[in-house]
Image (spheres, helix red, strand yellow):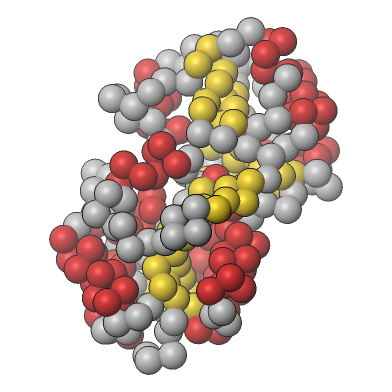
Length: 264
């Protein structure tokens, strides 16, 4: 498939195995693409500090999309595009969630730092993508929380993401991932697909020449915009139904399997 000019890779559940490692086969397949002139773009819900630790051997990925599109960086140009939730809207969302589900855990990503009003149990860290040796969210008082203009709000233990969307859908994007246990909230204009479209405009590649890999709801917009969307075997049904191809799972080198079949 010689018309592929860019490849967009999600991390968790896609390029990363369940053990949060990148297999040698996946690495070699992606590197071959880069060596053949294909742009490599990483698009993840993770913040920089939690994504970059996996990508030390991917220095050739020039454009990075973090926070589901709320932050885009370009290494070669040393530039970034950052979209945060206005302080007033963040306050309203916080008050709404606390009224609806008082036992939920809310954390706030601001640029590359994380804050919370109360300590998050160790058992919940994995669902936030935090490993045991990673920095923990800083616990601050409510006044400090209310002063934030967060890049992303994460909510654990709240099953009514639909209610949040109905209440604040004109101001923010609300996405339930990880089997619905994690609600991710970003500015309305922040999404993986908008961020990647901005990158594609910057590098002069049309969306029909893009291969996208993903596994969860936050990849759905990318699937609609790309010429060749590839769903992992472990992906949600909606992605599989919108995919040009379903590859092997993230634990069975699914990224490499598709690249080897269709690209190089």
